[in-house]
Length: 93
Image 1 (cartoon, rainbow, N blue to C red):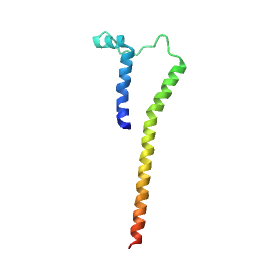
Image 2 (tube, one colour):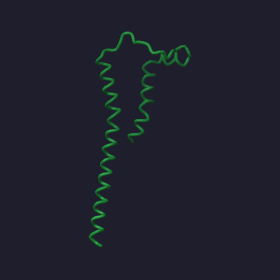
Image 3 (spheres, rainbow, N blue to C red):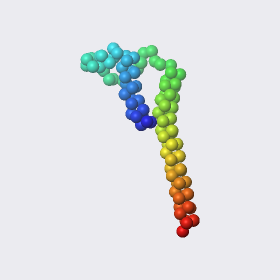
Image 4 (cartoon, one colour):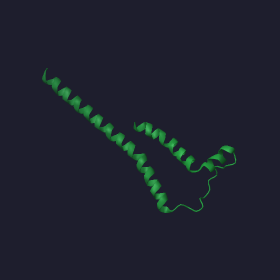
């Protein structure tokens, strides 16, 4: 499930931006728009930029961390089962 959420995140983000700025999307579709990087007027506050970057890092890294923890648990339980199986099979020999 984590992978499907991560795959959809860019698409959903693009859709949100398009919904928030329909005029800009229309100008890009018409060919009148530009992809040139320009400074925003008025510029965003530093707190806003820091908050967005922090949330992107958090929600980008959190699913990977959860998946890593689950993978480590599965590997450790598999190793424990293997140790128990090898110990029990050596008793009956």
